[in-house]
Length: 269
Image (tube, rainbow, N blue to C red; front, side):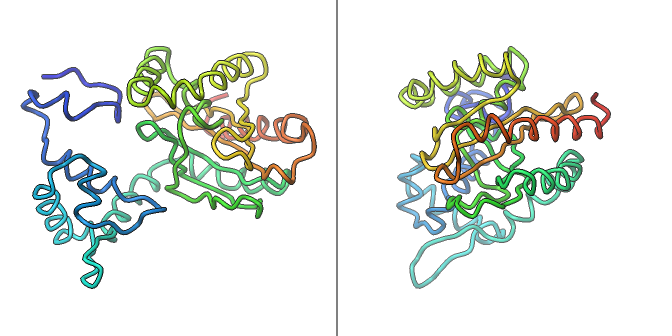
């Protein structure tokens, strides 16, 4: 049996000889992951291009997923969109995360104090996925919402999540990101190295438009009980609304205090 890697970092093609690994299931999940908020409707050819799967295989998978309720089909366009079955899969996870429920009122207070949009996120493969959000900054046109994603190395909250991991997990994540897209890894290497130093000295990470140039952010890891996935919290603000050093001077102290309150409420301080 292949040693179990950090969840989300395996490449199905490396597991073709693992008799415990279901390649058909992995291919079905690849089909579901092909859909994005910017491309919510896809045809079989588009899915095949995105996943690298043969079109006949994609056709069988989309047909099966449609019958199971995980995809719905637009007969006129001959394209698919995600079905309600996908949404129902996520709810049990969200409902079972005490840190999310505890964070919501604190995030609302933080948003009111700072005027920032506040988000709580966890890792999903090479991305951050938001599990809670309080949208206050109307200048953020990217509409963060529960389930929306940001790049792991290219965002302050993503770098905070990496720093929240153990040394071995951090190494595995960074190796995966480097192998998966070396050009993107090299693009964000300087920001990653800078945030390692900033976090060691002051306890937060800072994005000056790394992901989107018109949105800046600060982020802090959140301690969670053992065996739970690391989470982090950020504050984001449209760049045009931000006086010089506002995030570092005015927002970071409130963000750090909010995270301390959240950790204390979870019995982790």
